[in-house]
Image 1 (cartoon, rainbow, N blue to C red):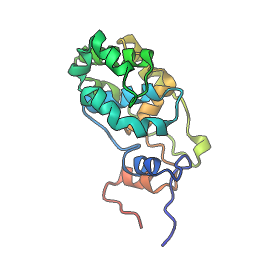
Image 2 (cartoon, one colour):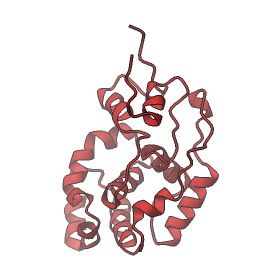
Image 3 (cartoon, rainbow, N blue to C red):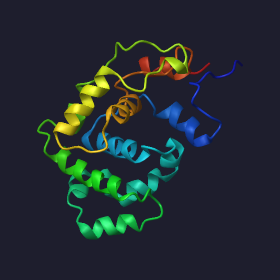
Length: 191
């Protein structure tokens, strides 16, 4: 049996391997699911993604399963509860941004999922190596600009691009990564 080829950022950490193989780059739809990813990408800013992955279940509990209406209704007592929760990243600016982003998401008439998916780029160049994967694109700049104009916070172009990668708006699995084919063809099986 040949070695399973993965993107170069995947380490031997089981959390990274599972995330890469089962989630990263696969299409995610639904307002609460997209809001979850926006929130987690914002919390990741300046930290290792592995830190966020390992705390994800704690985030889900702390943020009411990322229900947009529930998070939008958070009050000062909820902010203090979150600041005291050692199971999540306790950064006041990021916690306040999550609440503000939920409120901004509620105000999107078509829903945040539909809004974000307008920026899908299925024709993005296929990266041959990890070094060819961009950190920012014209699409991520445009998405960040629109989200900011709608009141979202912690959604700069780099964070927006990480979101685009994570939820399948672009397929940045390198050319020889087995998941690249699996994303394009869900019936694909690793050989």
